[in-house]
Image (cartoon, rainbow, N blue to C red; front, top):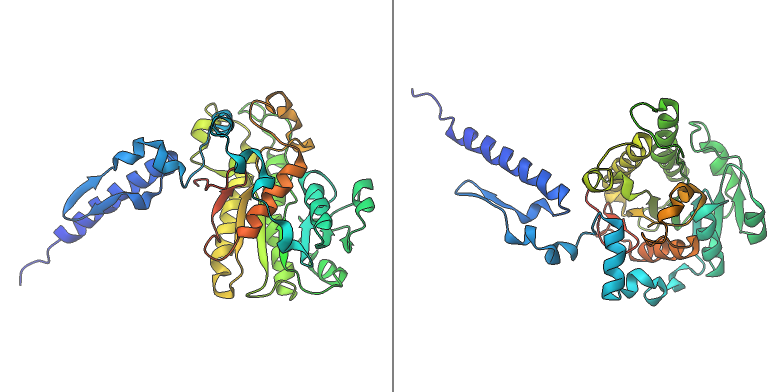
Amino acid sequence: MSAPSTSGSFNFRIISSRFHVLSLVASVFSFPSSAFIVNQDSPARVPSRLFSMKSNEETFSIPNQPARFARAKEENNRRYLDICSVYDPSYLKGKRVAVTGANRGIGFALANELKHQGARVIGICRSSSPGLEKLELEEVVLDIDVTDDDMAPKLISSIKGGPIDILINNAGYFYEPVEKIDSLNFKEELKMIDICALGPLRVTAALYNGGLLLPEKSKIAVITSQGGSIGWRFVQNPEGGDYGHHMSKAAANMMAVLLSQEFKSKSIPVGILHPGFNKSDMTAKYADIWEIEGAVDPMVGAKRILHEISLLDMTRSGKFINCEDGLEIPW
């Protein structure tokens, strides 16, 4: 009996390796790896449109923030420059919407806009604020720490109005000092990962397991950041740094993708949203570049987020979306 042929498996390994390399190239250039044609009978082909940004930009946003903003102005992109030209908030009226971190920043702006549009808002926070108190939301749940593994019973028992239509996992944390190899703060890095990645998972698990997120009815949005894109670090962080922030957002993205996969069978879509560059306390250390990079007031950022949530369904679940232009961000 002749020895079994190994040529098939050998060719497969070559093909798999070739596709892996092309996939890495695709992620760096914000290009879908599915666009590459790789098969056993023909060599890997890199389509010419890899080098033509036109087709690429129809699906993917671009990593260079000043260039992105400049192009929007040059093209008079109303979606980017005037969200109200496309934003229709009518879907929010009467919806029960829970927002974590609703006491300040983009979370407060979301709660404010939701209340203004007739949503029934549940603010979930560690503590209140004068602004939050003035909003007089339908429900405010205080003393909820998203890093607390045992907060679920209190969260569930404190929500009195029934199931939630939309959960917006917004609570986050950004360590202000710039981290370099000689100024690392491991405790702060773990704190960012705990709040930004595990925090949304704890809240989502508590609400789902407590019967407040319903199959075929609820939506989940995870507010993350373009800082979680590994492919974009080559452009946005050419000298590295800010380890904790970027690791926490990449971890949040992974969590949200896995959540979207688990919830497919339950028809609960999970949106992964970069809110855009907002003028907030969290980004104050970048105030010197707010204008050149197109930073906006949090109220504008809130409308961008709510516009994307209006589009969120199972076909968009698990996709990483830039709320500035509505395009995908590569992982």
